[in-house]
Length: 479
Image 1: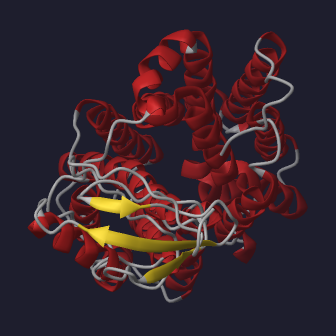
Image 2: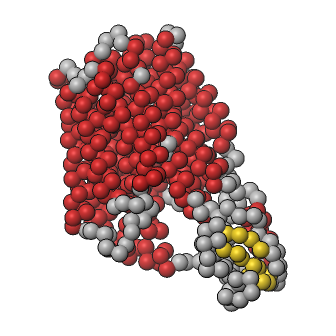
């Protein structure tokens, strides 16, 4: 190393700059110095310079060639200094985004369904089909994510705006057809928000050198479930109709979306970067790992079926088993608390172990929680069921995303889209399966047992994968 820990590299005429230097002060002009908290790359746009090979890297820009794409140089520097949210803003924005799309857009229906039943707006069978249309929309949205390559931030904004409008539309007394359409469209929006929020936020956090904050994003669904569940409990106490509940949740979603709107700022121009070796190798890796990728997809689809009966009907199941009990409406927010805690726990353990082992444990825990509601329908049983079913809910999503990245590398978004579609397909099957068995047996025990069995099969798939495709002994699991 010379002088100021600088490494000279040849100038590059190609402008594929990556100014991702972590949490730093703005880049300086000629002779300026910046500190990089994480390894980073300074390439393209006529720069000569490099980085020191040390934990905290001092980068000195040796020279700038203004004759080479000066507008792009200025634009790249300006983009690194302004207009990009910090790592914590990205993580919190992702949390709020998923709280709106999942906690309100998808799962507000769960605590409001008992109110709709009480109002006489729907029957249990009709409510199950309204839920199913939401999951059909989610499935369609996930498939669309496989086929399109839009600006991720723009899609997040679109999905959040649609979630607000469609939540408010559910208050209109237009009947089954309209409600089914609104819920189907809300499912599409929630799939877009989930996929593109995760992709956009994880990319920004990786560039900022803060990938561990990604777990905070996945606390969003749990926090949203808690907010809607507790709010619905209060609404029942005040004898609100379900229509006013939808309005309240729509207004809440609007306020939250307004708070994070500026964080998800679309790129002014397409982001380009030099093709890396990992990107070039990704298709070959996907082909080589196709068997594992398909097994992961099938197992992930079983998780969609395994949890959805509880996530759709928990308050109804509890009310049926404990008629007149005030506690019946509190198991759903307890489920949400467990979801958020599970996401926080997953952040601390997810990158240090084989993802497949973690997934098998998560599936086993959720299967136990689902089964307890069937065999022990009491206050203690439902409380334990809510905790055990909720803790792995977003944790297993996070572990599955990690495994997809390990298998697919730079092609992970496509694999994640396929997995999300399988998850959505599992969700579609769940509610009609449950209501059909309720009609035959008079209760939810049989459908809950079937859901628990599906989760156990998923756990066995992961254990089988670990056996037939062990990780190289020298390779640590990747996040």
